[in-house]
Image 1 (spheres, one colour):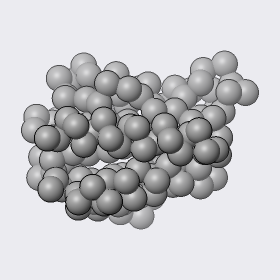
Image 2 (image 1 turned 45 degrees about the vertical axis):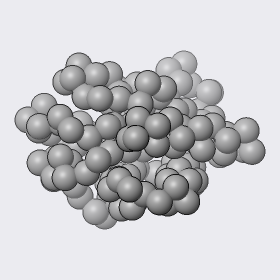
Image 3 (image 1 turned 135 degrees about the vertical axis):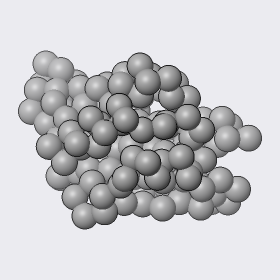
Image 4 (image 1 turned 120 degrees about the vertical axis):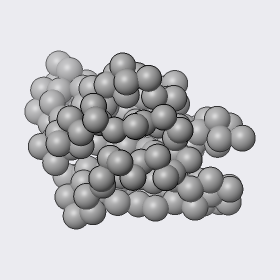
Amino acid sequence: MADILMIYASTTGNTEMMTQIIADYLEAHYHTVEIRTFDFDPVDVEDLSQYDAVLIGTHTWDNGSLPYEVEDFDEELDDADISGPVYGVFGSADSFYETYGGAVDTIWLHLEELGATLVPQRLKVDLTPDDEDVERCRTFAAELCQMLE
């Protein structure tokens, strides 16, 4: 059983839906999941090492940018010890924009640059998750479970 932190930013509720789908899967597989939001439950990056896995969910702002509530966290990662946990990044995006899911890419690439152990896939869903996206969220969670074994 692993201790997993999920922290997310969601304006329209789509990334929040993804968070819950992933959390439900992980809890059904006997992991402990703590869910926080960037808006209301700030996370000290120094505390990340207390978890076996950290999943970061973010929507993409405008044409590929991080939402303002995620920017500070992303910057603080530079000063954190990110060794230990497995990290995963997911979020909703909008294919209307030229840069699809840029915030997911930004966080994932930053963690990769810092040497984090990452779930290989970056999970992006176009707007509201449909049935196929629900399965993709579960597959993402299953991949994390395999990495934690």
